[in-house]
Image (cartoon, rainbow, N blue to C red; front, side):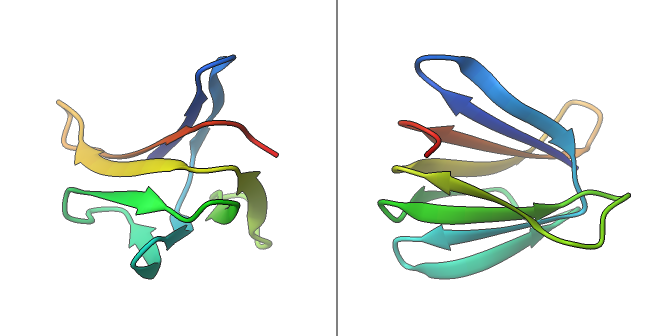
Length: 89
């Protein structure tokens, strides 16, 4: 699945193929795997987004000021996770 983190200042800052995304939503923490149902969630202010690529064992962490996360399917039926954040800290 594809992870994109977008900010107003720099546009797409991260664009990676990942196997797992874990996020801190305003209603609680959640994880996303390939094939996840479509949904949108607001992220906690000053939240940590974690992701794992196919070639990595450790999770990568990105600190975000605030934002929204959307899970959707592309035209090719591939899972895409888009995060629109104010800034990456």
